[in-house]
Image (cartoon, rainbow, N blue to C red; front, side):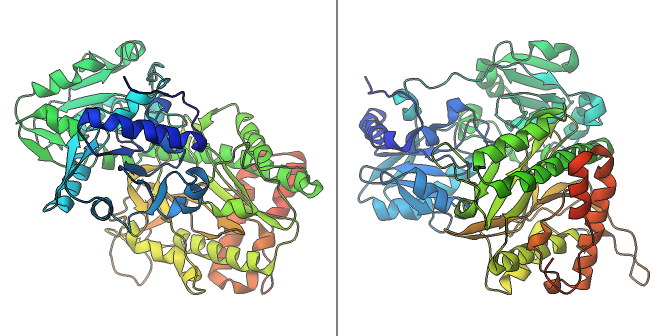
Length: 600
């Protein structure tokens, strides 16, 4: 009988929970265990039932994992979370800088003699386990699949999400699911393909769900067969309301039949080892496997004309809400009394006033002063800070609308900025503008463009530790692969792909700056005198003013100033009819042309 604890998700519980987990491990025949922030679907976000890493450690970031050994428990986090983790895991767990320090090397350094490290095979991909085993080859450390021991000590672990799935209409999707299934089936390299990513299944079948907070995705597994038919696996009752939408070519199964059905598949089976849980490999046994990327990933990333227009419409609606918020902030903040939570509530209220908001697209980041330097900061009652004069306020937010998903970041000054604020903000803005103006040949990936955003910062010896941009779904996940703009983004950018453009700069203990627009890849027109090489460029989707008080116009090139003035003119033209009263007066002033050769 294992000792159990009530769930409160507070770091103070960490010591007792860690002791209980260690006490449970001998019954599983292991010396240590891995606790990732993952579920069986390997998406970025998890339902409360699967928030094992947060429950154990108190760490709430969207990426990371814990390795629990007899004498040390390391929480592995990347550069986005190194300030956050210090506040959340207290002294119970040891922060480990990842990927600079790899798990295998850390295990070698912290274990002596032979050891068995347990892992839940549903929570790790085939690629992850293969890489770990390769890295540990020649040692006496052995990874072993086990049942999840955290589930044994988590007394009030939430139940799985059970809300029903809904159909996503073709007039928003731009293509029927029958056409999608037929199109994707033609690309398969095997008789059947196993799909585990919720956003891939949602896109393929034109369905949505509420199983992951802020992301309208369904918890399901699917098998796409080479004839375009699909086996869909969902918990009892969740798909009952969409049977007519799915039709006879999509066969519904109960959740527990997934293993039985895939074990009985005939012929070769296609899987994506980077997203497929290791447990699926176990269930498939000796079936011949064809390892290929998820066949829905690229088609989903290439938005069709209907989805792109939907995104434009969603961003104008969202932009009007942002303008009302920014005008409100400028009116209310000088009087004092506002807090980060007040800012979050006000912004969400302006979005809900559109009467089209389905949900916010992620937890709003509202970081005042030094809290803005925490890249993925999430305000709480404990951390809530006043919005003070002469401090920067970073607000990163977005909305889920049925026609599109938005994600926008603006950094504002309350009162009078310091020269350091202006210098750093202008460098971040120049990087954002450089990406926006980019023109590049087909075949170029985000890794080639990442330096454009960083160059103004590099010239001052500055940088930031996150990617410049991520893909964004169409009323789907606000973070969508495989496209992006970062040093690791090797997927060529293609027309229809939506990415964020969000350089930043963060000074620990002082302030954070990030400026973000969403942009969509488009074919670029030919230029007189150029060759006939096919070129691409970006169309800006996001419209809301930049804080002109933070722009040093003397540091801008003529092209940069022209781009900003044109962007502000477009913002006024596109949003003026959606706004009235004092907010419209504020918008007109915010979008006036920049004065040349001096700070605005």
